[in-house]
Image 1: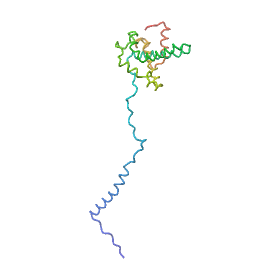
Image 2: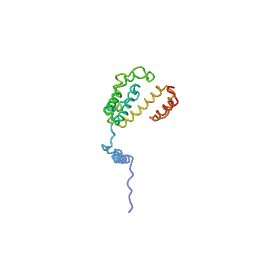
Image 3: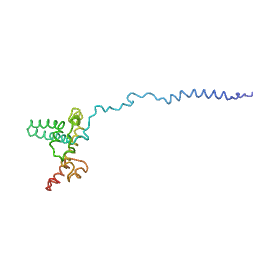
Image 4: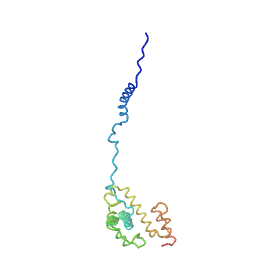
Length: 201
């Protein structure tokens, strides 16, 4: 028996089939593009607030930085006197170093020679208060002891170099500030000039 072929579909039937196929594909495509929710641990964390961050001593008044240097120097002498049996003096040096570092900027400004002043204006009360709350010599600074100690030491070396070069004005200035500063470098350069009989150049 002869087989009968299905009747040809007209344009309206083709459009109906196309719409039906699109309807079936649309949920699958939506499911593929919709990603599952991220776990809470993967969610982006908000940026940490800078409120409460430690203030910086960068750009502080030169006399404040010199006072910090003297404070560090007193703290280096304190254990030496303690080992020699001068306990009370060691304690005084320790406390004096803290006081000098926190609030000795104005006193240093009036005591140092003019060549060690970057400006004739003494540090203001606001500058002194800001410096007292920065670095190692405050409660927050002690909590972050290691980095703040390294920062205080670096600032003390820079201030010592400033003093030994008479405010970056003598013949040691170029050699002193070439490369990194260290206590050995500063002492070596100063001793080299003294051994040559040069006190001021």
